[in-house]
Image (cartoon, rainbow, N blue to C red; front, side, top):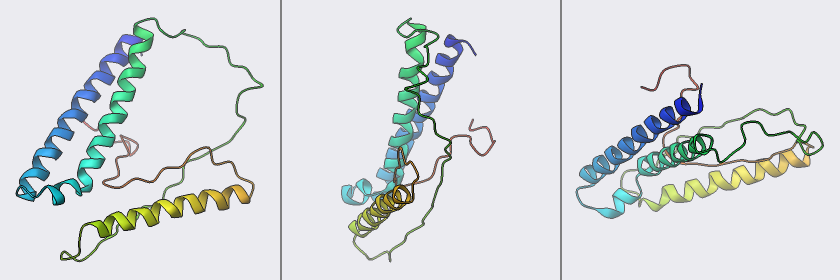
Length: 152
């Protein structure tokens, strides 16, 4: 794929994600009936926002080669390269609270999940593994086409 084609694809993805984010905002606002507390705690907003920012990063990355701001081939310093065989691992929790519970309860659940991520990373490193990064998120899981299906 050429640099221009990659930029076109990233641009289409960015447009799609901003439309999804706008639809989520409108939908959540309508569902909340004007209650900003309920609206702001809706995990769909954060998930849509995260997807948008991922697409924005892809777009920004795709603009650089088209503008000639990065070399087409960058030499790899074999001494500086991280020699690491790695894989991604995932846990997925669906956490619920009764409808009459205050919304911050789910914020508390997220903090517990996030702390568990720190604990797991520390245990893995104590066992001799490298953990270059880990992330905790809240909202719908977006595998971005990893399931083999077309997202369009």
